[in-house]
Length: 177
Image (cartoon, rainbow, N blue to C red; front, side, top):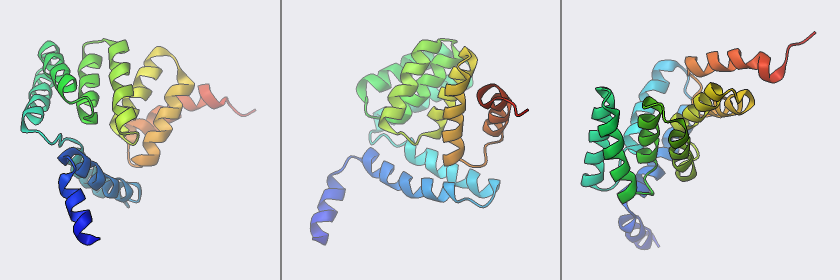
């Protein structure tokens, strides 16, 4: 049986193995004792999520991220669209494409890419945070609140999400008399 599982693990695409490793990191993140520990775990988690299993796809992801860093959203969208066309099962590709669309103020395509990312990786707190941000921007306070709450369950030390929840709380839950 052990030999069979070794063969099965070896035959899985690298991205699937990376997602398995991400599960352990998500558990660690949820029980992190402080922000420094959480940041260390998050960095390792994003490294796992960034493994597509293909050097060519990893290069497209890097080029897309590099273009985003210098605010070249056109180039970023081009690289990341190519990435998602060639690797449609790679959640981080969709998440990064969503960031590019958002930076280009293309809210509809951004939300579509976030939905793809979350369909592939429902625990992607970056994508959930993006959903919250888009809904908040559109005035969908209850949906934003729900998305931010899910982020905080996965990533307990996010000050910006905590502030967003406080900001939306009165509008969503009402005020006590």
